[in-house]
Length: 263
Image 1 (cartoon, rainbow, N blue to C red):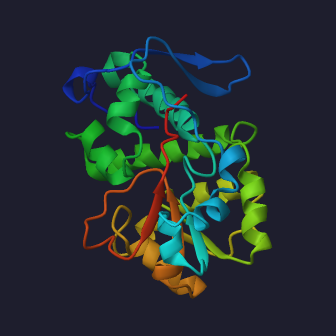
Image 2 (tube, rainbow, N blue to C red):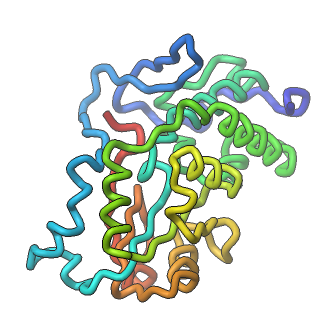
């Protein structure tokens, strides 16, 4: 562990003001979860129970973006927040390790801090933001330790979103090509797909940091399309968030969902 190397850091130095006070629920079975109190805006957690038929329904809607993709050839999926809600497990891992190394004088981070500062960030960027005065190699070792703890916590806690397997059946029934595209480390991605029972469903797994540019640049998506031999003009992408430039995303059709930290 890195406790001998980490300077003490106060949350106020890099945190953003919280907009929705929440409490953090950790059960005695060591499972992780979020609960929200007094939230200004509530969002319904994504569920594929209703959305499983969405591609077919949208294809019959003349105003749908899917009509421009006809005939639909392939579907690409992000993993975190799209196939499963892994954020509570990541939060637990960050909270526990940061407390162990004395971050914020040993006071556990809050969900507000995690959501504003950590959630969805690239490990390289997070290492610099959380430990700006530390040797970067040592800061990245902390990130590696955090990913290892995530993999230890995930079995028994990581669950597929409701209706996901019905959606996968819809895709298989129409013989659509597919790939998983993620910025997660390969060990995390392979574990999550295995826990979700989707290892065989995705013949291709593309890891963003293994490409020239990770997401939100289009390189991982374009690599996936090349590997499954699919055209971007006939491919639909399920993502949690995306910040591609207009030029980069010109020929990619995204369906953006907002399951991260939502209830």
